[in-house]
Length: 278
Image 1 (cartoon, rainbow, N blue to C red):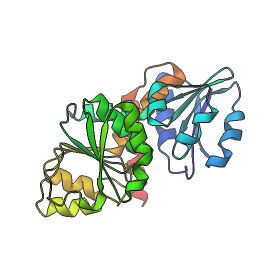
Image 2 (image 1 turned 180 degrees about the horizontal axis):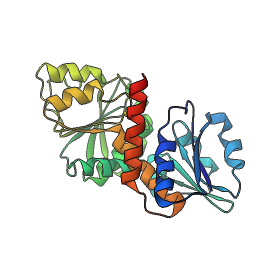
Image 3 (image 1 turned 135 degrees about the vertical axis):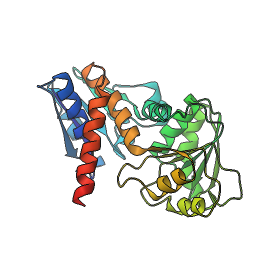
Image 4 (image 1 turned 120 degrees about the vertical axis):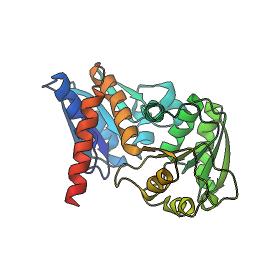
């Protein structure tokens, strides 16, 4: 059986390493998982070309939203968040799922973060939408979303409305300046480097959140993660999210429990190899 991760650019993806390690651990010798370069215009044709030998696909942005009209069914989490990161083929039917939300909850739980009393999300894209859903699952009914341009939070507001979460939009530049008490949990969904300014605040003595979840996994640690950890925060990285969402995908595609220990070891080894060659 074949599976793949789609996106553009996609060559850097760690997903093939994780999934292939899972296949090897379970002895699934006839399974393969590759990375396929695919931008949004090419998505319909690529999905249509996946015949009986295909088990499923993993999707990165912007394909998570673009894929929805191409699916026969969409799970409630993908429908609520407006994005599916997983497609599972069942005969001629295509089923869409979102494993990012459960992946976030699992990554936080692994670090002991299960009942945050307040949270701030940096960014308003697809990952931020999944973060709103994850925080709802952790018991929060109100969330602050920090963005450069408030207009870019419109879609996230729609998602939050479907989830029953109240959102306050705040300027990104004002975060961590000491004017407000720190949130219990900060989730950064912005690209590498975009949250570095917070590191300067924490190093200057501004109180850090109790927990910081930075979804970047390479380069790691980020400036934000380093400064937050030095300030005493519990830090969760993007690799944990990648691992747990991949575990969910693995189970959906293969029908087997994901061998997370093997997948984790392979992913860590590959990140170490990449950092050594930089």
